[in-house]
Amino acid sequence: MTSPRLTLISVNYRTGPFLIRAFQSFATALQRIPHEVIVVDNASGDGSPAEIRAAMPHAQVIENPANLGVAKAY
Image 1: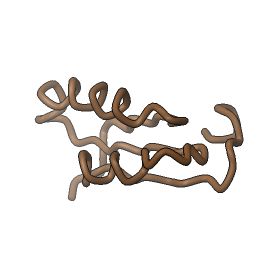
Image 2 (image 1 turned 180 degrees about the vertical axis):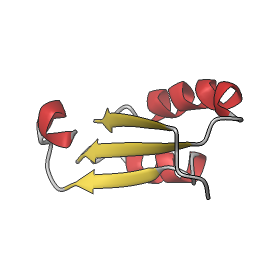
Image 3 (image 1 turned 120 degrees about the horizontal axis):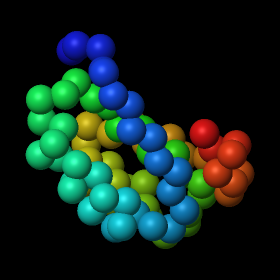
């Protein structure tokens, strides 16, 4: 795989369906751009990480054991 030219990073806390739709909206624009998607889940506890993995198998999902807040999650 080519090294990504673009990295999309998002922190998630109980917003899995919204985050999935947001990244799906980028899909067409990113087809020709090498990219990676990283999602950091802040202990959502609502099944978001599994939903994200199922909808976006190419994404790297990092699960924090606690809600660390946005600054620490990045």
